Each structure stands twice: as structure tokens, then as C-alpha cells.
Length: 77
Image (cartoon, rainbow, N blue to C red):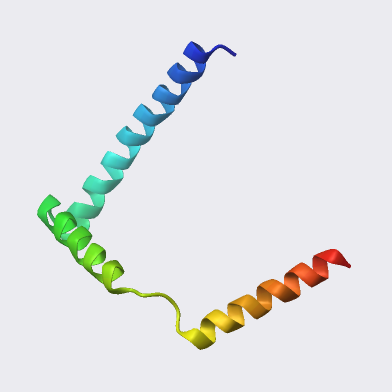
């Protein structure tokens, strides 16, 4: 498949996704009575929340490393 055909196919898929998702979004906006401004506010709140998120507590990090190590050992067997 040539690069041109590949780009065209991806463009068509993206255009179709935009069309379908726009219809879905309009339905949700109507159903929940929200506006585009609400989405901007949601995004700002999410960005602020994630900016404050420092990571998992130390105990959780240790447990995650432990499980990863167990998985690595299991794969080597």
C-alpha cells in the first residue's frame, strides 16, 4: 500500500470518527444539559487535579514494584 493510500484511508477513518462522535456528543450534551463551556471547565478542573497528583503513596509503590518483580520471576521460569 502506498503512503498516499495509507494517508487517505486514515483521513477517511478520522473524518468518519469525527462525524460519529460529534453526533454522540450532541446527544450527550442534550441529555445532560451541558454546554461546550462546561467541557472547558471540566478540562481545566481535570488539569488542575492532575497537576496536584504526586503519584501513588510509598506503600502502594512498593507493592506495585513487588508485583512487577513477581511477574518477572514467573516469566523467567
